[in-house]
Image 1: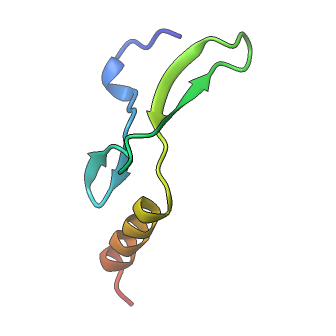
Image 2 (image 1 turned 60 degrees about the vertical axis):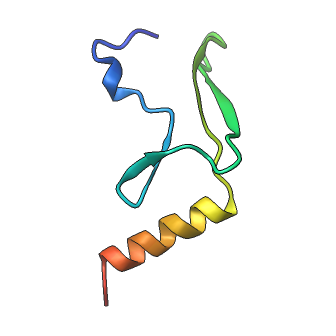
Image 3 (image 1 turned 180 degrees about the horizontal axis):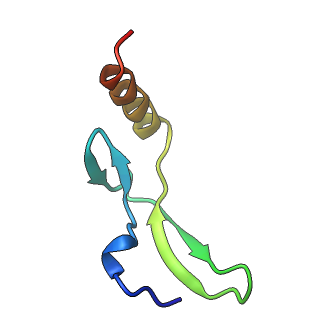
Length: 63
């Protein structure tokens, strides 16, 4: 896969206004289903990161 602007491809998770790695640095492969070619390896976030993302979203949209 070829992007004309490589800054469009992010391999981190966007949590609370920042691009971050998974806490345990885990990653998983994203492949092109048409040919199996590796596109990227991205952060594999878990429960802790998800909880932070939910808390940040909740704070951004108060009732």
